[in-house]
Image 1: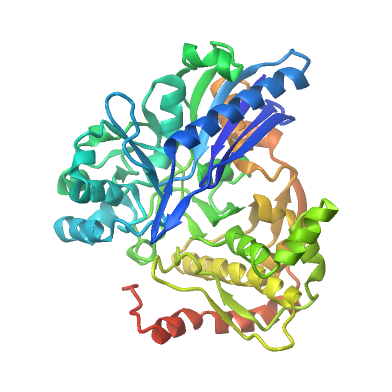
Image 2: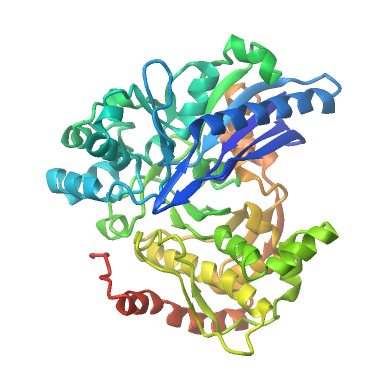
Length: 510
């Protein structure tokens, strides 16, 4: 059996084909640039669809070639980032670009919704705090600013169900992706009549919500030849990318957590029941369905995780990037070799695209403290890793205060390939940090969901026991942790200091 995980991200999409036993077979990646200007952040839906078709076709062909024609892709399991959506008319025409979660549209609409329904009522109903990053405020922006578009909308797809619909013709969305809309009741697993009633939006605008791993149907006949697929290939809804990563990292039990180290860094602790603690919800922590029925998760995230290191590579260290290209190496490998052995005194607040949890402040600015004429490029680079990790430590501390304790981190994604960053993470958090044999946990999560849907494994626990393997554990150094604890206390004062300098109010209200 061969399964394809189709992972749709904000900067590109990839197909990854594995056997049911976890052996990599083939894959492909394509980038699609976002348009970012004047606070507007959008993707081209048609370009994304073209890229999706290309990665599927190449991945499926690679499966045939690499298995000498003995294997074909039996199912495609789709996972994607959340919040952003695609407005489509009844003829299937895309009506507007994909407005990303970092776009500044929707604040006025969020405020109006809170005034109508009551912020506390919304939080109790949806297990999340209203915020313009979510899908519903963007839909309301169309309604108020572009009624000529809104009136034509048949479906407002999220990215996952847009791909599922284009591939199978069925409009259904996983409940974890649906939970990123600000319109989904995660306890009752349905669209919220209460919130949508106050918004004046009919729930038929959304796809039908389903559990992770639900089969939508088979590939559309007209796509088979182009995509190198059998007509029997199943199309399956996976989950929101962070839930797919948690699944593929083996974070299935309460107290376990994955640390997804991609463009956005996200820690996803698993809990055994929905939580409605106002103190956590007010800080932007949500409750979302896990891929295992009856379990839930929350997200602690930073918009600039790997994105901050990428910024450093492309700007401050552009010369290193050029040298690495000439040597056929990764710039990050060369930068890792340049960093000092000991912790730095530099403090970087990674709010370069605003802040996510625990502030949810889109107006927050990035900040760098503690530079001197003796600061080297290596010092600065180590400080970027430390800064992102301080921000995640801030989240872990906040979650702990609400009764959600993380015992260890299973690190996945591109950042987990850096042994330097993994040790920094262990030393700052004081937690063991595990890397996995396969850091592409989102793809493995998709394979697990597909293998269960096809009956290869009886449940996700059995799939995890066969497919999830720890590669190395990084234990915290007690002395270094103590030094970082002192720095962390300083870090916690930066946010208020920056808000004061810019004359901005702290938006958090306890």
